[in-house]
Length: 144
Image (cartoon, rainbow, N blue to C red):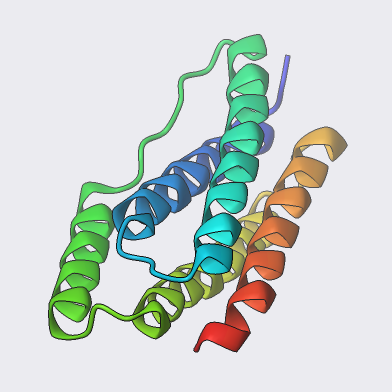
């Protein structure tokens, strides 16, 4: 049986992967550059894969998934649509996703610090998610 820190960390990671996938879904059709579109599609697949692993852990611990906070999701949607209405460029898409990556990295690190008693496997999975966010952020720099 997993301790509460393990379950809490996994739930936060679960919400993070869902938020990332949703954000990429919102913008990918606006992208003009084929390489940028490929980067987003590949990152979305990686986030979905990590989300599936997180979900499997949660199921094995008989715990439920966690959805992103409705306010956070709504604010993200509003910011995305307002910025893209004003400037529907690849640079705007890269800027929006980079902001999301930075927020994700910051939040995931905060959860790793908060839930220190989480098991090693869950911390490693969270670390892989942080790495995915860092990699995506690096790949987007040339589009800013």
